[in-house]
Image (cartoon, rainbow, N blue to C red):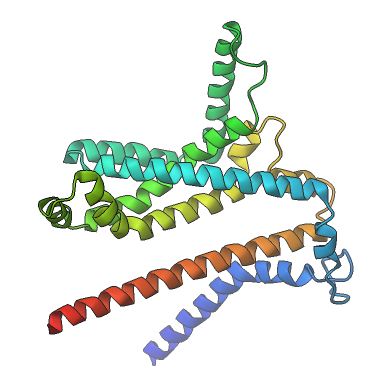
Length: 282
């Protein structure tokens, strides 16, 4: 009897948890098709907010800035984070532990502190450079945004790739060297395929975090406006249903990318398991 009550409580908790997490998203999706601008009563189904979104130049410009920024920063952060993970994996135990703990600081540090500290760094560098007359008066803009996003994305790539490197059997790399590969060929033919799922996961996390970021972007954007900053500016008056439509599109796209990535990983895992079973049979 107690076991039955416990299971009911567990199911109720899971249902409440998912309702708390996903009902607001469902509400947003539904009201992106609402005929009126109100968000208290659904008056009719329409696509006009999606059509209006395509003609809103300010929102579209902010969206493209966010996408460019997210793509460039995610690619660079993925390359730097993967290289850093390889370097950390080759360190001694004490050095590896020290570097890992330092890397953790950037992820647990509040974003407002990271944003303000980066802004102070850029302002100090700008003052120093302006005295030497080799930089313009104002460097705050897309370059500083890009550097800031790379800075807070690199640790997430490291924390995705490093565990995969720990699971990797170093004998595979040594076997590739014994079979005639040089270190570069062994890396690209043996190591990289093994850690590619972790690299892809780090890239996707960096991409979504960069698109979503507000606090760090706010302090380092200069005159550049990303999508979160544009939405924040609009909320001072009233949120337009166009924002609901844009958020719905972004949610569907990101969800599709995650599902496709998980499907590819599951397919690769099943293929590896079949290959292992085939090897056992032989």
